Image 1 (cartoon, helix red, strand yellow):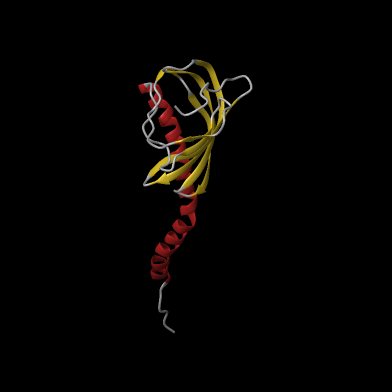
Image 2 (tube, helix red, strand yellow):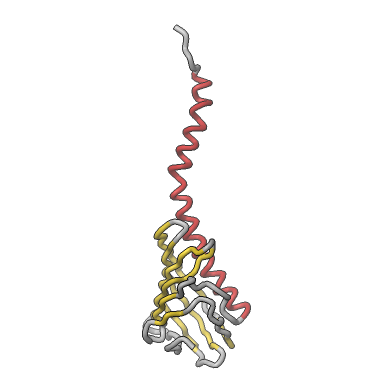
Amino acid sequence: MKTLITPIKFSRRVLPLIVTLLCMMLFPLIAAADTASDIKALIIDTANETKANMKDTEGGIAAGGALMFWSSGGLMQNVAAGGKPSEYEVFSLTPKHIEVVTLVEGQAAVAMYYSEGSMHEKGGKPVDHYMTRITEVYVNEDGNWNMTAAHYSPIAAGSGTKATAVQ
């Protein structure tokens, strides 16, 4: 009786299939790490850019705007996309303990973290000990992660911002 497929040929044919199947099974795990890493990097890079330039980065708000509860304790604000970035006399806020929950891979995620430092927006009152819990919801629009909702609440010993409305 003649064997149609020898063990060596069989393994050469099956190995690429096994590798392909393993990659397909592991891809969601690898991809999920990408969204979380992208959002964490965005938060850190945005804080660093603001520190370096003493003004907020351009963009970053979803096309339809973003609903926000600010750390000042005011009412919910609807922040429009394309608004004028805030400028600062002092800005030393540092994001800490960033955790990201991916809602839909590559499309939507929620970030939760702390922000601590001091800030003084031009024309505003200084906040010497800003210490706030932050929850931000991000959506991917045309390859850019933009915020669509946020909630900032001061930690007991800290202060939030003084702003109560969109200028």
